[in-house]
Image (tube, rainbow, N blue to C red; front, side, top):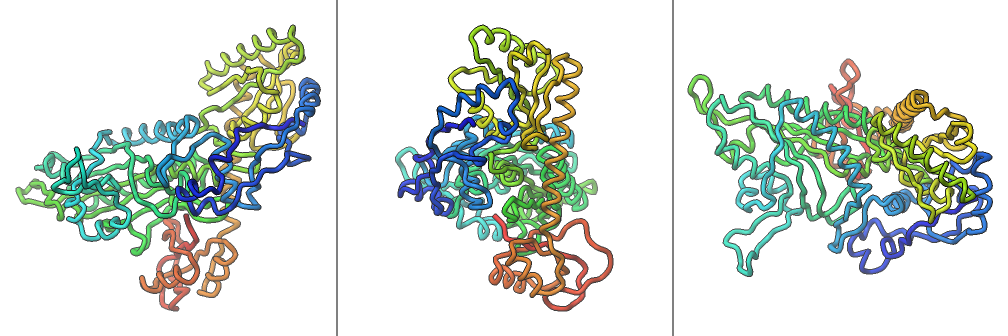
Length: 547
């Protein structure tokens, strides 16, 4: 058995006063240190040793160490989540309370998200641009519901250049106000419409309860903003963009989100309607993974953003805004990860295949490394993202565990006997033990590339199917408030007919901790009876506790 030595996390996750001030609520559970022993210490990939690597693993048993491990998901989901973020080298804490530093591997996942969405945004007619992060406070005050919704989260700048500012500035919490200020200068005629832009930016919201990636003081996102001549065009745009997010979730992140409309209580401050994609995490809490807002004319009326229509009449524009953020990375971790660490869908994995060369004697090294280099070039030429871990400071077993922790979908092992036979050993991250490991895959380029691509596609599909099955088995259809409370008390989502008031919705939140996540687009046919009031209901709503 080979033991994985990981960097000490004591400075990162110790429940010291300094760290608990930065992320107080997520550090209530102590991260323990335990010895890797028995099955719990083994990489799933190591349980089935090949003849080639067995001597290496046996030798490595002599180097057993005591170190910090990943807390089991079933034992403490929050502690597990933080362990994975640290051990997979996704992020670290920043020096300011509630901030985080996104490390290269974590940022590479964000880049994969950007790469996909940028293409889709441009395909749908949007252009990238950038707005300042400092916004005059008077802008925020112009839209009443907007300032009311964001006021508790605002970060303000009152001093600049050593002098008190004449008007305090807001550090961007979102950009609807400054966008409208500029739209007013750019839009004059119907010929200027539609105007459709997107920006990739950082956002600051002074959150009191923080969790890395999911809810932090500062985060990265894209925010799209569009202006239209008619309400129909704005509604079509809002629906189009939530569809883009839905397809990304299913096809790239392998997360089976439920798409729908937010209730009035949960609608974005300043919007007429908010559409959302809701994802079920591994602890069965809901994560709002992306939103698209039909803003109507609320902001254009507040800012006087008008255009002259084809009849020569002055009209206020109709607007949308829509966004996803680095929160999606947290969703990927909590949807797919397991006790061995991160598990990444191949389409967004920074590394799709890791190659581990294995040799025992010095005269074996050159042949093994040459074969690894050859396989690497073959896979790269097929546009497969591949990395060779040929360092000799760590044992093969340590490398197996390390790359499992980082969620790399496929691992290729190459040893002296594999070189002689012209074949490799391939293991799947998502299937432990014998079932996920295959010996004797030919190094012949066409055979190897076809096999690897096929397995990457299988893993992508398997992760989505697994997450969908988990989601569906944890949604309960209810027809009464008592049934709703029972479902929520069991940690499940409740789905039932709803036509009750905002006050009744807030009562559910107060009494159960659950909110209406959305009214799903997919609705059962026919009239129904509201689970709370007994009145007729046209729609079912989805209730759950959430992040």
